[in-house]
Image (cartoon, rainbow, N blue to C red; front, side, top):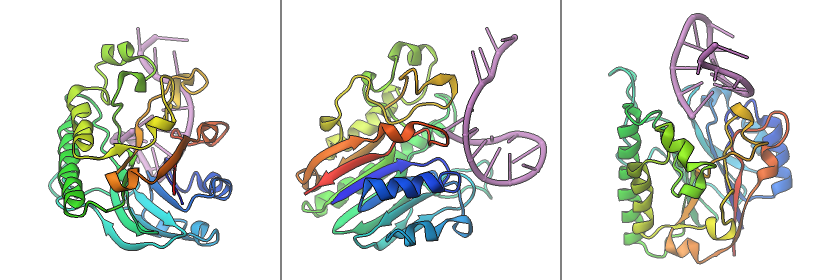
Length: 267
DNA sequence: ATGGTAGGGCACCTA
């Protein structure tokens, strides 16, 4: 079984590339982030005509997460328990469309779009940290209660956990950039402390291995990227992993997302 | 010259 995660940066702008990728990648489950669509604008037929069931969670033109599966799609959950809310005003404050869960072929899959943080002193940063802490607390409880649970937390984590996960750590520090700060890295590390495993890194060691390249500044041709998309597996799932790849080819050419798909092979 | 691209939706926000 093959499972994958991909921040597509608009499901509508990327429809043709996503369809072509599904056909050649042959994945059984795809966790999608940044659909940037409401349900009424979601291209359901794209998945159905290629043999995938799909569940989507989208509230506006921002965020949006989905799971497509050809090995079953059950017990769909939109938002995780106690998911922190965010908004500019009281009326617009909601649990955003950043998490959707489903059981696919016996694996509990979560498609996650972790808040960006925006700037180290922005209100979005404490929101990001609280969001991660709440998710970690629940995910840790899920695997404690059920140690045999095959669980995959996959998506765009908006954190580069190691210095080698960015193209120039000194440049990032000089910018006072997000994604590399100690609190963000600590929030990520707490998932590992709880028993989750980065199942992709052993098969794709760095340095110079990334999942995201900014559209500006010719970052992709200059190989200046960031590793911020991860699949964290429960101990039980991690034992089943036989391989993983980052599909850097998909970042090439006109109309590419700024993120590459990340694929994990399970026995 | 202090940006540089991309997307959604139609002014400007988000990344």
